[in-house]
Length: 494
Ligand code: SAH
Image (cartoon, rainbow, N blue to C red; front, side):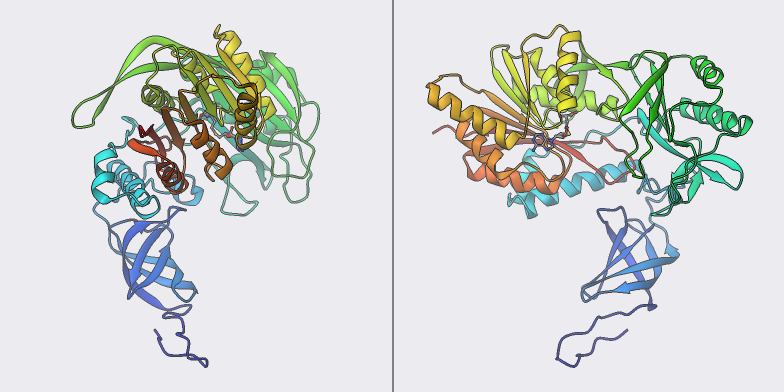
């Protein structure tokens, strides 16, 4: 350890590479790594958990922080468990599977609270009053409805698995514990087929070989399953036999072949050929009635209403449908609709939230940047017989101001009652927020996948005349550090 002044009198790094020290882990970083503090110095330690005391070796030292490798857990956290998935460590997909699930939830709750206070500038008391307890899963495994599994060779053996770290090396895996149990069966059929027919796997480095990925999607409510085989070619050897075998799996609804001959890490190519069944599967999401008790605990009462979605290999669809139903039902209840309102749903994707809202609103306008998603949204409205949802392709920060301008020119008196936003991680564009403030809807519902940008945007909306009424985190991605949040804001009356 050294803490002396350098030649220019600047403080040198406190620790240097290869220093060994013991530290207590008190936080989780954005990549799931443990964070410890020693004499004001910050240490990032992969595979260490909140509550652990660990012996580490510094691998890279900067002025105020360092990365360190875990050498030994001196005293394990009382919340540390044996992760049920044997490959959770090399895989890295579930960054915090070794943390007891209730502590994962507590960590996510704290993160939202801290960001509200630190970035949003809300007072501690206020944050505690409006922040509701995070909604966790009862069974936090087997929730994902989508798997994109790379295929590779280990010597002469075809394997499916995941890339280790940032390498091209595939760690074999046929069953992922957060994925559907049927995946294992499908992947075994694929590797057996490759062995029997001497079909090669694609090699990312050389660009040679044939099978690249297997994409599997399932409709949780419908039981429908889709397999899409992504190949560096147009046709599979023994295509019919393989397809028949896959079609024998109960629920198999769609088997297709996607051609991707590009040297790219984008998984799907443009060209798709259906080998058996339909080109899509369907799933439904239930709309719940959301009832909150005075302790802010929530119960979800299933309603008769549901929305049906068509999912093709290219479609965007939330990966945890069980939690998505809850998240959207909360967004719907926050919107406070009576059936007459005009609602905008910005960043609408394939129209999932829009269609939930449309069942209870007068009119819904959805805006989304990806044209294919808007096509899917229109098709989804059609198959649900929803006629009061209208979709526009474009940037939220352009479509909304253009609408505002048009209304102004035409002297239209159309009132916007509610605006819902569900932006990507970087949050809303400033122009989009300013236009929302200009339109001044009664209520704003903000659905976010990043509490930090959410807090930043909530501050802008608060400064612009809105009051934050409720913040509800929902655990959409158990065992990862990600957290989804739904917020309600209400316009302060003049
Ligand atoms: N509400 C949807 C999708 C949310 S993901 C759902 O729950 O399924 C965020 C979406 O915003 C993505 O579909 C992305 O394509 C879209 N998007 C990103 N930037 C955008 C922008 N500037 N304007 C409109 N949509 C945008």
